[in-house]
Image (cartoon, rainbow, N blue to C red):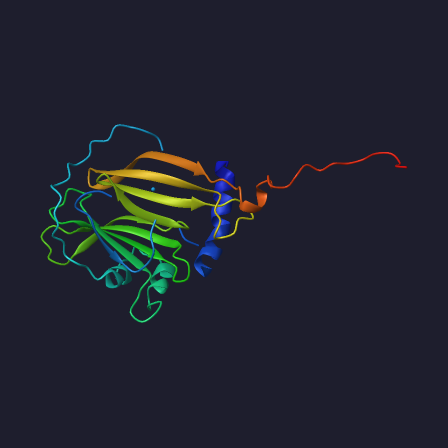
Length: 218
């Protein structure tokens, strides 16, 4: 896929995603009700992560998003009310990503119907504050999802060609980020093109050879 084609397809997919398909390491605690899910290369001096800890302070992710000026109005509307009962389309992961004494908070917001990613954020506890958090990463591209891989932030985003259905993207971009100098820096990226082969496209090997005849019989 060309860069231009991917950008055009991504814009075309935004409206569909908002309407509603589905999209580790130690010291990670995950919670949530939504279903799950990964530039130029350069040397990055990353801040060493603290020893993994099983202790974490649970946050009110809905309130955190609602009061965050970096979160778009569309995402705030998506979490303004639960999908059903008290179930919000939010997944929360606690992991050490920034070298902070307390685990960082990864928040993924998805559609209620199909768990398609609407936004991914990382919050870092503000030094000297018991309840304050700073938004240190935000990505609101269509079908985005943030997670953790070997103590680093990994962000994946499904990509669409023109004509793709929301359930059936053409590929996926995966970006890896390291924390350095008080911000995340992308240091690696890869792209995967999904196979378009389906069961209906597979030749039927059980059928016998077709035998044809030419000319008149008699």
